[in-house]
Image 1: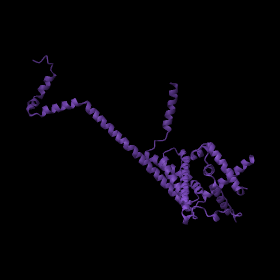
Image 2 (image 1 turned 135 degrees about the vertical axis):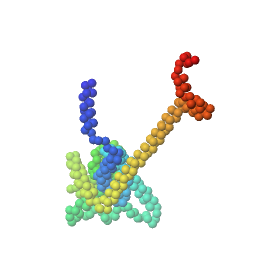
Image 3 (image 1 turned 60 degrees about the horizontal axis):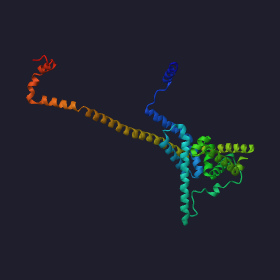
Image 4 (image 1 turned 90 degrees about the vertical axis):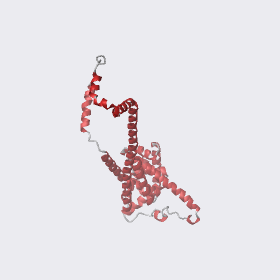
Length: 208
Length: 120
């Protein structure tokens, strides 16, 4: 009885202070705004993740667009704090699909004599070759460092690359990265550590 | 070991700075396509939500209609004598030979209220 009398005013106060119920139309608008904010906050980094992985701007844009549509179609109704790992999981799946398609295509192309030595997807070796020395200005140095880093990250094994980009670029914690990658937190730590070791060996000159 | 950790921290920090700088430098064409993709996704979410609402409303409406039909049929089955009685009354009233009964309706109503033992 005492408990009931103590909780009743609290419940009444909560009822009085709570916001008025939203209409269904307002709820749809709120969700749309929240989804748009979320996508705006991740789209550039997601593009960068895809671009580093597939090394092609158009493919990377298609991958990001697919991932956005898939998230909107299937998971927009989920709580917004679940969106980040879900989005990156979809993104990683799309990247993997793209890489698989390319592997199949390159195998088929290898059988064709006229196209055996053509591969438009590979980066130009002259353009991507490391420069012999620092550029004329700070801007050029930064661009050079970015290109070197992106190439090095792109050359990492897929899981290491995912772990590195999700943790370092997207800033996900280990649990969210594990959810995005569909593996254990221990695996994320291992992949991330190996990625750091590989990058240190590859990029030592840029960090000294 | 601590040197390794220190080197890793330097690498992580520098890599983060460079990658963020790289995302900030995306050209206008890429940014525009990303914006269009975002708008398309938001529109898709809105459409998916409406379609979910319809997918929920249609079975719910069908269920409600089925429930109403079931109630109507059930109540109809439970009261056939009443319907039958009403039809019999209608037949008596509509029959041309019973106009006399209609003319003396007040009398018959009074008779029905009397105690049968008192009559006669």
